[in-house]
Amino acid sequence: MKRLLLIFVTTVIVSCSFDNKTGIWKDASNIPIDNQNPKSIEDNNSNPRYEDIFIKNKTYNEEKDPFNAFNAKIEAPLKATNWPETYGVPTNNISNFSYSAEKKLVFRSRKLSKLSSNKNNSNENIIFYKKNLISHDQKGTIFIYSLDLKKKIFEYNFYKKNFKKFDKKIYLLENENVLYAADNLGYLYAINLDDYSIIWAKNYGIPFRSNLKFANNQIFLANQDNVIYSVNTKTGDKEWQFATSLTFLKTNFQNNFALDLINNNLFFLNTNGELYSINYLNQKINWFLNFKKSSSVTDTELFLSHPIVIKNNNLFISTKNAVLSYDVLTAFKKWDLPAEITIKPIVTLNYTYVVLKNDLLICLDINGNVVWSKNIFGSIEEKIKKKFDSIIDFKIVNSEINIYSSNGYLLSFNPSDGSLNNLNRISKSGINSKIFFLNNKMFFLDNRNRLLKFN
Image (cartoon, rainbow, N blue to C red):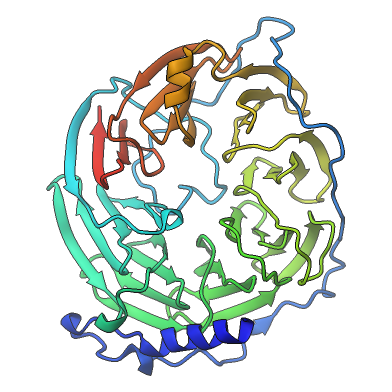
């Protein structure tokens, strides 16, 4: 099976080229696979710490009121102007968004692109840059949609026409007017956003499967074999690489990066349940932790998680069995909560908020103690609960906890006690992307792939 997969991927890569209409490179198969010998990180170069983590306690399943009345102090709302990467910022965490809060629909675009036949591929990779939405369709066409002009101002397809039927997944990152794109065919390329020219393109041979991060003129990303690459942003050449443990079991969870720019550390959680801390300046491994019972590549245990989050000197990871907090420098475990969450946690200065699969919304203090716990449907009519469907996003907006459902409902909660403040259906056509707050406006795509803008 593995041999057939390798043959298929090789055929895919050889068949790809720039679109003939662009006139930039007629045959991208002439782009050589980068066979240079970059620096590689060795496991034994820095005394890496290895630790197995298992949570054996019973899953948390209890509603709880705050012991004393208190006001959950949250950072001032952030007025974001751009969204340059998958999770907005290097740490994968924004505590509080600023929004005009009128919840008034002021614009609905035409359908931006054809919906992907693969639901796991749909509207996942969206960024915003200078009042422009940047994304791609299932055929690999990257497009830029102007929020001011209310139309597409750029479309570009890297791939040969006879291969456009193959669904593409493209991971995007913008930095200093350059758009970086990595795909599930093993290509990485850079586009100048001033004149839309190709700066460079590289064929790395194995499909990429991670978000992208930028620091120190390097792009960090990983392929489906859990190999980390550091790529020079000017040339596309590899600076260094590091192979972590491979797993043959594929899930919806993708390799995930977060950055601690203060301490120059890159954090990498791979699909085999390993969490690495690497200094990206000297390529030293600070520590790593293992969250699976078996490290064998032939084991049948799936590792499931959500993106890692950093806040100050704390790193948060959520596995299938627990939410855990670690010191970013020492990997010392500060606390854990036996629970399975349904979406990436939100971390504020003093509190962590999580939504569990058993429908509990929980506030944890800085020591991991449960301050309060509420069933999100406790004050909602049964008929509304049945219509709510799955949670698609979870954010704190204007110091209020917001939970969004895929069929367009918005639940708002008080962060001090978990009481329900408001219930609205903001989109009858559903929600089919993350929620974005830019310049005090709210944006998302609906189930017809139309962009909705709210004041």
